[in-house]
Length: 319
Ligand code: AKB
Image (cartoon, rainbow, N blue to C red):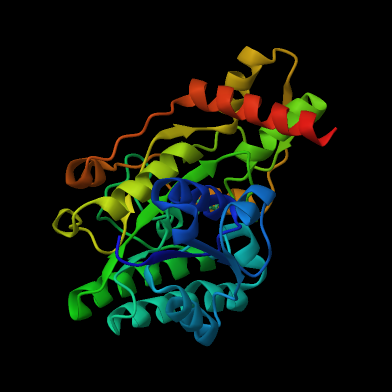
């Protein structure tokens, strides 16, 4: 690798595990973490960290120069539920930060960009099951509108200026190392904390709300794989559909009950129900599987086992 890697938004749910994985693959000193706030001890102690606001183009440019950065992973974003409470702020964070990076890549300051999109690009008029790569997209959340717009700009910068930008439409990502912040799919993480702390959980989504989901290790594998694939294999320059599992709160609760028969679930849907109802239940990701051989490893049973094991260990360590 010619230059180093900069991860913007490195202390968030996906950023944390992505940074650790990339440090493991490419060497601790070659992967620079940055965020507005500090992250976990493991992240802060394993390699360089630079405080930076994703929207501060001058600060980001200074980091590109200081570290001779050739690849940027732009992970900073305001997620669906939080964004509905501050639409303009969400728009500014999600869009301006992307424009800065695309323009740096256009000016050849960086060679390769990863930018995450989401299943939120789809809306109520999209086919709900096995949602195809190319289909109707009329998102109704500000987060979804920002991701849909970002996809169009990524494709534009690739077609017009040859920018090597790669992107995935992440489903709900399930993990225990760092908590997510303000997503609609977060119930599927909270449920494990509820189960292990209180033997129960009240879901903010209704029992039959099916959504596409994925265990963190698969999401990280997909991110590394798409970035390592030869450029000619990346035929989709907006963003790839990406899928592993689909389940409802009821199905997830039953899978937890197999391991913890005393676990109880209740349902009190709130404003996030409407967001979830506007998204697909399952995704057709055959383009990613065909173009760069994407394949997931974790099924529902292994996801539940990993989460119960990981969260229990964390709770033990906190005592
Ligand atoms: C959210 O719920 O907002 C995110 C997402 C699906 O992009 N997890």
